[in-house]
Length: 188
Image (cartoon, rainbow, N blue to C red; front, side, top):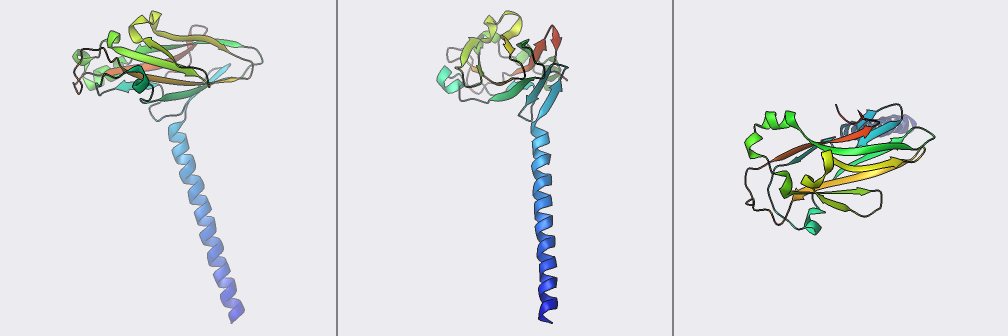
């Protein structure tokens, strides 16, 4: 009788362990797939690590210094080179016209001269620009080495010298584009 109870308890414990492992695996991959948005070409893979993917939004006006702006929302993504030769690419920031129409905020757009943007590649230093000073919206122009990966981090904030009132209804909506040989890789 005792042996039978031990076997029964062992089967129940094994079933509970199996269920726990399966559930944990399923939940992990469900959230992981929601956070990784992939864009691929023959030579580059672009993986965004946030649910928002390539879309950037700034919906709360709070003029801040650069040091505070560097702690704002972080848009992170990796650019992986699939080839055995170096591949040049550009990162470009363009207005998200679809989101501007959807939000009906065309008249409430934060002017580009009031926005600061930073980019960091890997463990390098942050490079900070006024959004208005970017020529054709190009934030970065570089190459990723053979079979290499560039980890990119972009942040955007309202310049401390802006005359916009904190808490105003102004918005900014942009799209991060990764461009390889004049072809846009990272876009829907």
